[in-house]
Structures are given as structure tokens and as C-alpha cells.
Image (cartoon, rainbow over all chains, first blue to last red; front, side, top):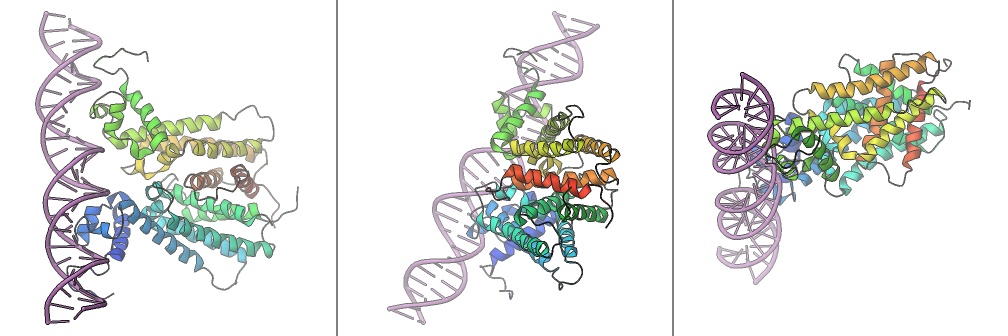
Length: 204
Length: 204
DNA sequence: TGCTGTTGTTGACGCCGTCAACACTCAGCA
DNA sequence: TGCTGAGTGTTGACGGCGTCAACAACAGCA
């Protein structure tokens, strides 16, 4: 990106704003991202961000979108060949999902929280979240075809699985779960229960 | 209670604040609950609420606690005898849980959102949420004993079930789920998958 | 009747998001 | 080479917010 030396113009303020906002969120939550504070941290005036985002909410939406993209990359990176049972891949995805949330709680909150959505629907954000769902649907479809899970509407199954991991991530982040509970066990148990529930079985 | 006529003192401002805040939340979200606005709506000055709550966050915590109590009552009210399969009771609980969230989205968000928790741990809030969990654990234990679901740590099973319904409620509220999907079907499918996943089965 | 603690009011402070008016910079064209 | 206009950053100002401190009205009790 090349330091543009100290000039009147910043160089790439827009990108810097998104990055710095993400840092501030991880340090002090979304509420700490103030137009004035972020400007000052970037050595720029309080109104400068308005040249790149119409308002504070728009900046936060951009940060949330970046978070979804990061999460998507992380979930996709488990594609290490079709080795091991392919159901194992679904389990890994769930695990990585929850782990991402635990590692970046404030960012995760922002991604789903109303804070960014409170204005009218944000198409960018919906797209980012939507591609997460589509990836999940694809994986589920593959496992249906291999007979590992019940053949049903894969979209509905994806919603169920997403609900489970999102709910677990959310409860963990909001400290609603007894800290003495082993988090890894809980993650395993959650993904396992969902997979068992979706597993093909003879009708009873 | 009893209208105390128009006097200098309000009568029961504390209760009125909690009630009015809940109304404002349902109308315009938690962000619309402003010390100034709520005071004005109750015909009282902007600083009056500070005689009953140390700050705005404390007021919101009280509202969130009231929400948990309401939700708890609703989940418990499904105790209509031990009629029908008792697993059916678990399914009804999940259904009522999600329905509550859909009927009071902003209130539900507040109950779990960081907005109320962002200060140090709120013991009242934790207690209210905790009793929800305990009720769920109790019900699960009963069904374990009747052999309807797998015998395992009921607390962990409760967390899994809670995660699923909370996640579904959250995704629905945040409009992350395609509005064309039938919500009732999705709720049924989610609870069913969880129950199937917890159902006793011969080891494979 | 008067005292005391509780509850409500008003004024002030600093922080916030945002807008309007202005200033600097730079690329491209005459 | 110098001008120009679009793009980017700055400053001043406004209204709204949470909150505190000082003051005022009330209720109940001695």
C-alpha cells in the first residue's frame, strides 16, 4: 500500500477506517467506535469519515461485512480433500464457526446485532450472510447424496444447523453458559446432536 | 397501585419506568429508550429516573429481567397435566420459546444483547436466565428417566437444546432467514432434529 | 408543628453524530 | 506551464444525549 508520506490526503482512508474500526471493536466493543475517536486514531478530523461513509451505521455495516467474509473463508478452508468421513467436515465447520465467534466476540455480535441492521435492510450484509448459508447448503447436499444424512430439504437442514451453532456461539459470548462447562465438549456435543438428528434412520 | 392524583410525587415511578421502557422498546427498540424521553412520557423530569436507577443501563437490565420472568412463565404454563407424550412437552417449550421471541423481538434482543450486559456481570439478569436453564434441565431429566431420550448429562443436553431454539429465534429476529420459509415448519423441524439427536438409540 | 429523609426539578458539563462552509491537493487539459 | 474542477480533509456549529450537583416539594413521624 505504500506510505504516502505525511500529506494532506490520507491515501486510503476508507480501508483504514474499516480496519481501525475492527481493531477498536475488538478492544472496546462497537460502542467505542466513535466518528471522533476513529478519526483521531487515524490522525484525521472527526468529519473525514463522512467522505467515505454516509454515517456511522454504514461504517459499521462495512466492518460487519468484512467479518462475514473472514468467517466464510475460515469455514471454507476446512476443504482439505475429501479425506475422513465427510460428515467430519460438517462437524469441523461447526467447530470453526463457534471458535471464530469466541475469538472475536464483539465483531461477531456486530455481524448479527441490530446495531448495523437497525436502518433499512442492508443488501451487502444480507449477501455476505447469505453466501455463508449457501456454502452450508452445498455441503449438506453432498452428504445427503452420500447417504450420510437424511434426504430432506437441504435449505431447512442448513437453517437448523446454523441455528444450533449460532445459538451456542451467542450464548457463550453473552456468558449465559456456566464457565465450568468444557467448551470443546459442548461444541462437540452440539454438532453431534444435530448430525445424529439429521442422520438417516429407519422410520419408527 | 391506585392513581395517586396529580401530585408532586409520582406514586410508583420505578414500576412505571420499567413498564414504559418495555413499551418504548416494543415501539422503537432499546435505542429509543432515552432518560429524557421516558421521563417526558411519564410526565416527569429527565433526571427523575436517577432516583430509582443508577443509570440507563440499570433500567434496561430491569426490563430485561422482567422479560426473562415473562418468558419463564410462558414456558412453564405448558404444564397442562402429563398428558400426551412427555416429549411433546419439550417440543411445545421450544415452540413457545421461539414464538415469544418473534412476538417481542426488541425485548428479546435486549434480554440477550450486550446492551444490558456491557457493564460488569449483572447478578439479577444472570439469575433470571439461570432459572430458565434450570427449568429446562428439570424437564429433560424427567424425560431421561422415562427413557424417551438418551441418558447423559442433562445440563449439557439443556445447553444444546437452548442453543438451538435461541439460535433459531435470533436468526429469525435478525431477518437472516428467507421470509418465504414457513416459520412453523422450521420451528418443528428444529425441535424435532434436536429431540431425534438426543433420542436413545442402539449404538452403531 | 417542625424535622428528616425521599423523591422530583433545573442548570450545567462534556461527549456524541451530523451538516455546512471552507481549504488543500492533484490529475488532466489548454 | 498554468488553470480548473473533482475529490478529500478541516473547522464551526447545532441539537440530543447521559449524568451530576444544587435546590425544592412532599410525606410521615416526633
